[in-house]
Length: 112
Length: 115
Image (cartoon, rainbow over all chains, first blue to last red; front, side, top):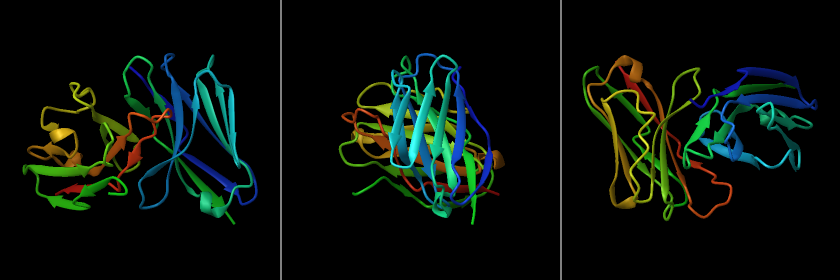
């Protein structure tokens, strides 16, 4: 079945770049997403990329997609303490309707 | 309302009891999802409803779990004969049928504790 995997923990210093990686198994994925969950809050969409794109940039966020390797990454430039949160990678299957599979989430800890 | 709401926000129950969790999606959103987030675990897909189509129940972990969506709006997730392993945060999300990105909007969740 579909699976999405990501590392569970990342620690960076304030001002550095953060790179969160994700791999997925469904080759028919149409959209891939990054959601952010702040402590005690619900998930919010950060950004997404369509599967025919390689890269998407949105202010401090850069998403890279390697469709051949089924690898997705999120780079946060100039990481701030307010970026501390759990980041979920998710993929929407092209064959499963609008079913979306989420990874386990990467907890980003930003040290001042 | 402005966003997805869920009730109750917290529910403590005894093992073996039934519980009902409610989700009010964003008005006009055609799709509704239920997920389970266990401590230290990711988001586990449970079920999703899309318009009048038959729901995708492929993520329900056992036949103790069921969900309904009445009138294409409010949804109720029911867990019968609760077990301690059912303790988790249950998240609901809704999605507009019109958005190209298919963004899901999440509610704050219901934290279920089974004693």
